[in-house]
Image 1 (tube, rainbow, N blue to C red):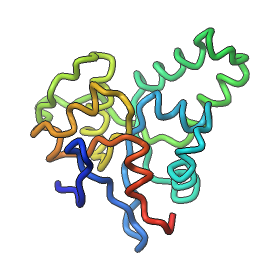
Image 2: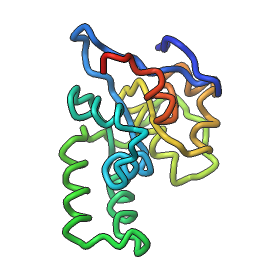
Image 3: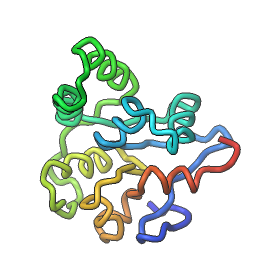
Length: 167
């Protein structure tokens, strides 16, 4: 699979459909989910609006959702349990579940942060076009030959800058 365009760190830009083509398949890491729905980062309004209006296929897996559940409960966020549950449910209702890697799946490079390996696996198993993250360990893998032929890894800011102005 190839991806049109390229970003400065060597990753490739996501596909955008304005012609009614199938919705893009995206993976959002935990920090991106938090930036979009907990912190409502204004710099990511284009991405959030795209997700809300276009409803791309957001891919996830049970262990990634469990991580989100744990992170939402962090004391420094000071979120009441009802708000934690609301955010988790809202995201869970958007995602398409992806199974664990199948035996014989093409190899993936190991991520320096083992906790982030799951996002690579989700992108691969779900046939994602793009993994959206700010995580430096994941972004370093954007140019890896075992990744770039399967999906792009980009920052949310890059995704927003590459988005057509019609979104």
